[in-house]
Image (cartoon, rainbow, N blue to C red; front, top):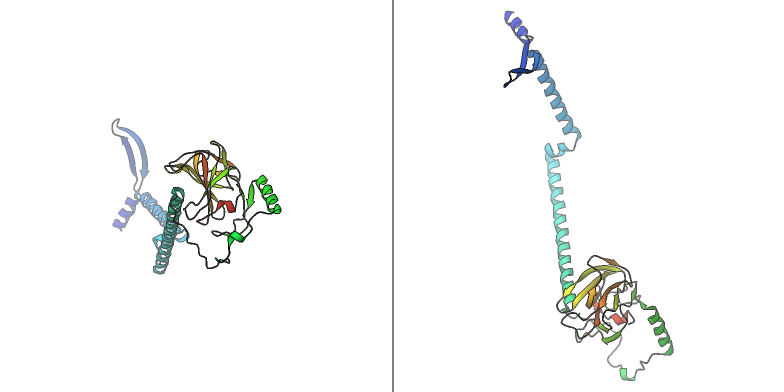
Length: 289
């Protein structure tokens, strides 16, 4: 009984906790405590900590990462692996597509493009037709139609093509001048050359985005525009380019000026190329120059 009384008395025995300033030996803080107060405070703090931790684990997503079940862990791991794998495959495909696109664009700009293989299996015409005996002179209606189209400076591209189908747009004439060299696959000249006065404005054939605008040794200042439905228009030997990469241009908007830049040039002219779905086409089939 005496021991119990001593323990009980010790629990409620008052003690003073004093904090002194060591240098000045002055009392900074003092509080009176007993062992029971300390035990109650520790118990309350422990209880509060346990409750907060338990509620956090039960009612927040943290429990899925800290204490997942074995089945949940397997599902989470598999889902994460599949997600990462799909992302890697997607990035690889995008990287390959971008690499092919950039290589093709470089080849187009440099003029080092292999000739496309054209199949004649579906050709309706035969070699038995003697073109010398065919009257190819335009009729009066044809001449009148040509004059109207030339005045409007645009041509409908609703017909089918050998390289990309229907573009569904109206192409604007980039430059009025003399066509000095036409589209010739035998000579690997996949463009037309239009001679004009140096400094004359060159316009965009359609609305699009400038994806290349820079200097090349062979063809001088070059501008490449990306249009809708897989169509590219390329303008070479420019005197200067008024647009920069990333600019969005409207149909008929001035993008550059006629020049004589680059090694592969014989005078002020525009070397104009038109590509549809990665295949070069004759611009004169779509635009009246």
